[in-house]
Length: 473
Image (cartoon, rainbow, N blue to C red; front, side, top):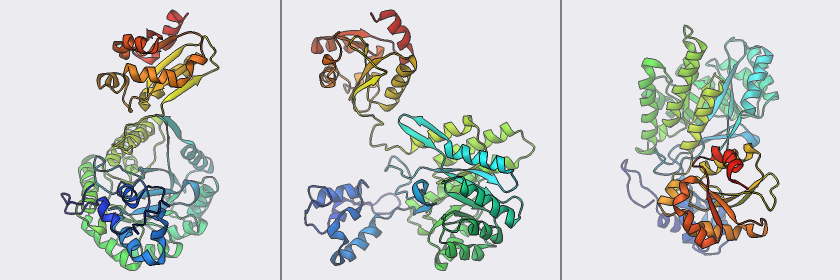
């Protein structure tokens, strides 16, 4: 980042902007060598200004407030829930991820209604809370439960909210346009900090009173009307509501174009035009696909899934969904994870030696790169094969095998060095290394530099079991 204007006219920070407001004591209490180094990390959002003790003193209070204002994100960060599974939404600094890393991945809520049986409610809550899938080292999960009032019965809603809260630590979204229904739900979980969904032009005052009374965030709904949405936000801000979530409406089929345009315009206004009235997290409701009762459940689930995937790419911070099909949720969570990785850094794992099973001095030794997708694929194939073995993970600067070899990130020198650092020469009595087929072009160089015999393995790690059976003696 530099201290120049971006396309929208908003000033981008430089380390100098931050440094001028720091105490400039170079005390190293923050863990950095000097204040300029700390300022650089602050600009890159690698550290928080609260890590500078001298800045937190009374004498520097004015500068602290200036820095807080200077560093606040274009999209306000809002917290839903309490405890270890509380979810932060929003907090975005820029519109596009190539400009700066996104944080606070889109939260996905699965719904229950107050007309479902107790068993169905509990099953859906358990499924949502237990949903997890390990993908290149990340645990992909669902984050919230949305409790919807379909009965319009305050007591039924209250009972359902209470049952959900007793059986999960996930944050809750209370869904109704009736303030009396919402109040009954809040009474069941008065200190849980749920998200109220939603205030509209007819009920905003009553909903605002509830948000203030229970100190919880409030969603603002104005379907397909951004002007009305801004007007309501302004009114609610003046009323004292600071933690808002914007809902411009989610429409499927012919309304999908308006849906995508509205979410895009809201985020552009906040990030590029500095419109603070639209600088709040957004919420999408792909669950709207299930309103088409003439379709089969499979069609509705597919419609919901593809709308949800579009909204994840169009800056939405919370999604409310109904379907629990793995074929819909798993690709969605993978897509979300790919968008919310740091584009400035390769997705890599730590280089070094890994063991599988209980290898001995005669066990095979494999080699791979530290690109996360490559490593986890190879590791999974070795583990599932049941072969007790060693795996040398070479630092290829987060590149895959073929691109690492082509770009000289994975070389014979790095492999030879990795062998020495692994300590394998004390663990095995043989000197044989199995390398990926895609690294065959450097096999001769590896042999020369390491004095190990190189066996060129399969191009794909799925072929490891057969290769070991045929070639390893």
